[in-house]
Image (cartoon, rainbow, N blue to C red; front, side, top):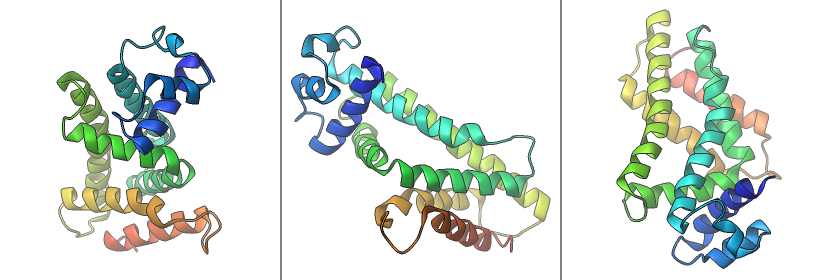
Length: 194
């Protein structure tokens, strides 16, 4: 892992667990395995590290989830893929997701980042919601299924997928595959696809 990525990884972890104001540049350097002055070769301030770390985390989600969508694919298969990839990401990257979610809540309140950084982060989040909206609309058009408003369905699906990490345990009763199957079954039922 390169120094910049080591710093971003450390930033997500420390800012999410200790808090932004409680984490020093020295803490970041130690967690990343670099000397504190080396941070300034990559970032001008702690705020810039936070903004870059959040974008980095969102890009990782995009790579593992959003980029797996096939716009030419059959709508139900596209939705199933997104649900399964989203749940997998939540469960396999739970520590980073937990930290990023904590930081995103702070960002949403406008406590730390500039309006420009906040806008960039909101664009990432909106893109996924927009994709899910398009896919659900395509499912409705293809199947003729009658289900609640698309916006309500999007929120329900995203919240359900996001919360999978809050209860899942690696040594628990269900495997990741069983959780993905169960979530897809619940969502397909909610949308009356089965």
